Amino acid sequence: MSIMNVCKHFTMISVLLHIRCSLATEPGDFDYYKLVLQWPGTVCNAAVVNCPNRWTIHGLWPASESRPDPRQCSNVEYNKHDVQVIMADMRRTWPNLQNVDNTLLWTNEWKMHGTCSPLKAMEYFTKTINLAKKHDVKSYLQKSNIVPGKIYNSRDIKKAIQDSIKFVPVLRTGQQNRLKEIFICYTKEFALRNCIQQDSNVGMSVEYPSIHNQQLIAAFHQEDNDTPDVAPIDSTHFRLLFPIVLVLVFLVYCFNNKWKRRNIRR
Image 1 (cartoon, rainbow, N blue to C red):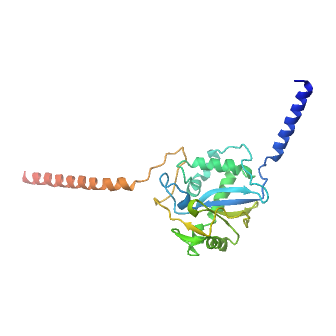
Image 2: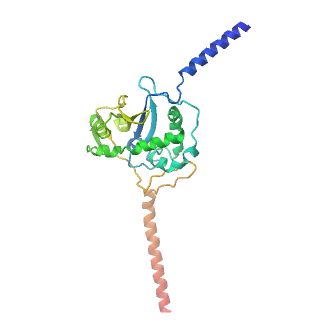
């Protein structure tokens, strides 16, 4: 290959790289945030994790008004040590509803969305949790007599949220038109604003499903993969063990009485 051809190829590659870099989204290059909250009755894998009886966080997503939403804007990796101070809050408000390893969810949310914000990891996760704590979605819906286990008009669900936050939210449903997520939108300065995205896969009638196989415990703590989870008590095993324990208690009682009678005779 001649020197001239090498130069041409080099120039072409340089131009392509420049175009690619210029099209890449930089952290902070977006218009607003979407706070995405999810309903465990639709999302939670009850065979794997305990399903909390409240709306939980899916993520805080930088969004654009006229372009595709930005994703994965830098190579800064999630480091659990950066958020150790708020780990208890993260486990409670931002659990992985599909897997016992919360770190999988947190890593993905930071990689895909957090890196597109101008915030550092600690700021990103803290801000998301604080925003989510301001919204008791279950209570918003209850004010309009919308409770889990029934089917409702999607407009009524949306209106119930809007009446409480005073801004337009977005609904998203999952399979069989079950209410899955609610988007609440914020400006880049974290003031509430209307969402402009259309509702996703939402029909006229939407099921607000109950939480199946729910294990109610004092505090819903799913540890990250550094701390092994304590397995919940299996009700089936408990039912099998209960009569065995009763028999053992009865045998001990009988043996104890027999031993006492023998001592009295002596």
